[in-house]
Image (cartoon, rainbow, N blue to C red; front, side, top):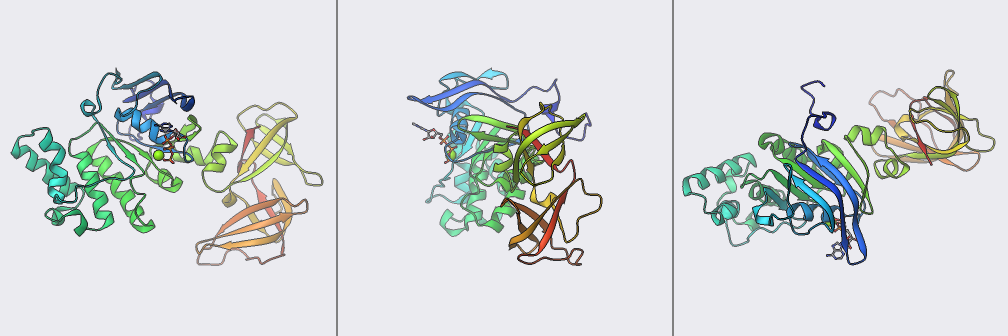
Length: 375
Ligand SMILES: Nc1ncnc2c1ncn2[C@@H]1O[C@H](COP(=O)(O)OP(=O)(O)OP(=O)(O)O)[C@@H](O)[C@H]1O
Ligand SMILES: [Mg+2]
């Protein structure tokens, strides 16, 4: 393992900071978390992604100690945290709706938890100043929360959660209240602060782009289960299921039947009157087995002529065009009615011919562009 790459999950010697061991959480008869096992390592920026109600907040609340698992165990640094009350855990949670004390100054908001712990005054002052510097809030120290902006309040909440130097900081939709631009700036600040403090962060977000930006690893959840846990690039490039491929980013899904051609190369028959497709896959599929091909629109090339050396090429006509400034997405309709999306980057120099509605076009992609998934 290259020492400069941070990937403790690939190191069999590395000890996880957090371990979920077959954790189930039921509320009455409803199972919110279903026999879930997961390791999170020190200094990770770990993101939980999934649809509303899949159990993200429940995971966080169990880590923080506001809920106890119905079955299974959660370990922090190798110790079962079940008997440890929330305020004794080296864990802090920044809530979905963070609440600052409106009558206290920014300085006193950050100092609040330290005062409650009776931290000696010189230490407390030094710590608050350090947090103000870290979150670039020095000039707002004497103001009240209503006298600063939403983004600044966000940073105060973060400074307050980090003041007690928790081992683990849980962030439930921390940037939900911010607009897109401020959100992006704050994401980079969060990453910077996380790196400087060496704190392990677990973040919940609805925004997949945000998860991909900040996280060392992403867990995609569905109905109390983990669907895939991997680095952002692996989640995007090699999703393990149609669910994950579809949840992260835009994707074309083609359903068909696989026949092994050579080792790791499959022919996929998928529609009457359409040429078979070719895809490489390291997961073995039986002949005739139903499968899905997942292809990202940016991996599909659109052209007027059939590219001479194309492994996969299909014909259609432009049905719709979504212009996004830097990108254009063409919705191409095939003879059988299937719509395939192809995305092109609008670079300054016009390198490709552009197309308009009802133009006949060819779509092509390489054998490795698509991910072959079992049914
Ligand atoms: N105290 C509770 N009693 C009963 N059901 C609960 C309780 N807390 C959570 N649930 C249920 O457990 C499921 C998971 O809830 P949770 O809050 O973890 O979802 P989430 O993934 O955080 O969703 P969101 O993205 O909407 O915040 C939901 O169906 C929810 O209704
Ligand atoms: Mg939630």
